[in-house]
Amino acid sequence: MGRSPCCEKAHTNKGAWTKEEDERLIAHIRVHGEGCWRSLPKAAGLLRCGKSCRLRWINYLRPDLKRGNFTEEEDELIIKLHSLLGNKWSLIAGRLPGRTDNEIKNHWNTHIKRKLLNRGVDPATHRPINEHASNVTISFERREEKGSAAVRHEERSSSEESSAWPRGRLQQQQLKCPDLNLELCIGPPLQQESLEPVKREGTTLCFSCSLGSQKSNECKCNGFLCLSTGVLDYRSLQMN
DNA sequence: AACAGCTTCAACCGCGGGTGT
DNA sequence: AACACCCGCGGTTGAAGCTGT
Image (cartoon, rainbow, N blue to C red):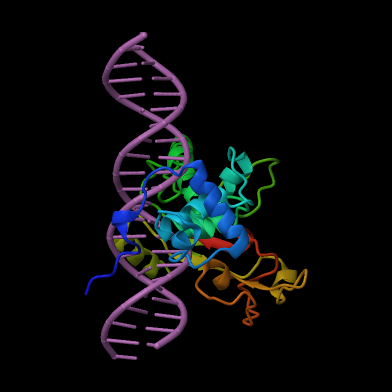
């Protein structure tokens, strides 16, 4: 059985929104709030489908949107988050106040991809282009050099390799997929103080919740995955 | 000025997950 | 368990604007 359409397409407008439609939508949401997108168009007197209304509000009309050009800091944060999360635009947007997933996705496809290619970095894998197949660690360890927040790509030394990976397993991994290794390793924070269950400013935020794999904002796990500030601490993350 | 090619980004589409019955 | 419905996400499209010739 097929899914019923989200709206009666024969009687809905499509394409660019007019100023009048925008005003109707804003006025309706001011009075009734967000939500119930399916019934909203009728209630607001709009000949649009609910999905279209939702998209217009979230991506364009919401009052808390920042708009304007992305800053260098925002670009670097997007690159870091993308290397960690992949194309999870809504999760990335959650870390950039005032930016929408659609905006970030567009910005990625039009600007950042090119920027990374110019740096010699593959935007899909965040690994150097033309590098022969080797095991690369993307580390978010804070750099000592002033002003550089660039993602650091470093090749593992053989001694590190042997301590971090059993040799047999490493070779097996390379055989299976010599070019791409998406395995994510999450280790405990480097600093001793972070080994304690973190709870600053009264809130505890779990990494799993933060990534959307768990629902609760008030996680009870108290493990090392819990983050104190709601911002990922990249120092504790390593991607192989 | 006119045209072609390129870039940008708002909007659409289809799908999957969550929830209620 | 099965189904229907709604919401949100990510990929894609296409119109508008920009740039080069």
